[in-house]
Amino acid sequence: MAKNDNAKGGKNAAGGKGGKSGGGKNPPGNKNAAPQGKGGAKGGAKAGGARGERQSLAPKNHAGEGLPVQAPRLKAYYEETVRGRLTQQFGLTNVHQVPSLEKIVINCGVGEAIKTPRVLDTVVEELSLIAGQKPVRRKAKKSIANFGLREGQEIGAMVTLRGARMWEFLDRFIGVAIPRIRDFRGLGTRSFDGRGNYSLGVKEQMIFPEINYDMVEMVHGMDITFVTTTTRDDQAFALLRELGMPFRGNDKPIVPRPDRLAGTLTEMAAAA
Image (cartoon, rainbow, N blue to C red; front, side, top):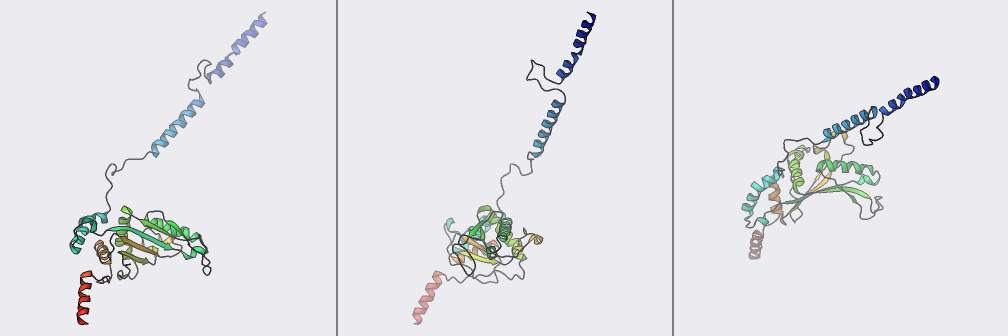
């Protein structure tokens, strides 16, 4: 009998195994209790690390938070100074008659893209840096066998700037890019189209400070068109000159004024 009692006692004493194993698990009646032991410590450490990462990624306050966005410098100059000068110069009576800048179009044709399409990717990337806006890839409208061009093939890129980006680009173009043109002697005045728009060509994209000279793979140019709200070249010329465009000498676009033209025709008729 003693033997059996000792055996039972040994089993009861060995019941401490159940106590050990139960120490790391949840009690049978408490399923929602937090896990104890190593698992709980690891879970807490992970949760704490995630909170720390979220806090580090949270946006921090800056000095200009809550303040209104400042208008472009050149636009403010136009509204405060240029508009009044143009009104006085042309004798305009309506505010809506004062010429203004509507948009700027930057166009870049890449003939090498016919054989090496990878070149167009570089041009698009550089145009996005210059304009601060993603360009649109332009496709060929028709096939030309002599050039090996197929209809629908990507052959260039263009970007249209309006609003604040337009004024900021013009400010950088006049104040930074144009002075970096090699052997610059002024912009020509013969590139007005007769409807108040002005176009010019740039031979190198490296005049823009956004382009890193060491990363340039190919030197290419671009065409820049300034579209105004007026239909007269003399008003567009006066607008761009007041904004700071450095035209060559004192040349003016050849656009006869209606009153002078009438006087000239009268003199010609009298002489005849």
